[in-house]
Length: 302
Image (cartoon, rainbow, N blue to C red; front, top):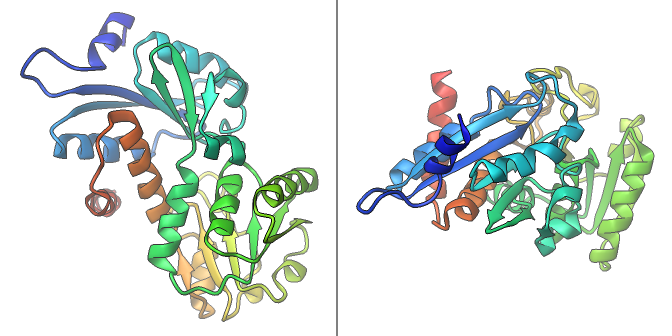
């Protein structure tokens, strides 16, 4: 798409036509993402035109750091905004002109809105996970919860868990320094809770006495098969949530369910974070239940 075409696709159209928007998704392996059709369908249902493009840095053979060039390029081409996903959610921070309070506290951005000449970073992963948890596991005990993964998604989930009432959050990552940094950061914001960093190499010790386990790493995705926790360590009353949604039923969730644990897949989080981003891009509140139905229609069609 040329620069003139891109600019013509964004913003209000001629008098009497539907408002139109141009947005995109930057990340690695985003080709199969369901986010583009989710946004486009919801836009059509609300009487708007929205074009959603994927910018797959893996297919383009670009390093994660290339997000620093892609964001200003998209703004120049007339995009209304971008979604940002793995592995760029933290790398994008230095090229933004401002952050919302949630994005600044989380230290990661998954949504960039171009507002005039500025690129403003938001984080809808946290709100998306919080809504998903309340919808799917509203009565799950939250005295002690283990979070696997201290990256961009993990940071958002950590804040959502503590806001939901978790009393002790164990942040575990193979990079123990990253786990310690996230635990310290969220601990400053939630002083009434306890935040403990840990390595991820001893899952048996991690899960001892835990009420819940939330998995926020790429393990289990189509391009990263496997499970982060041995099946025999999953036992009721432990509940298990996964932020991965492709596939919707990861090996971790299948193992947990077969052992009798309550589970929460990543589908609702994916939809609700997309719904919050849609509202930021268009200024129009979406119908979240309709988007969730669209999501399951798309999965069934694959």
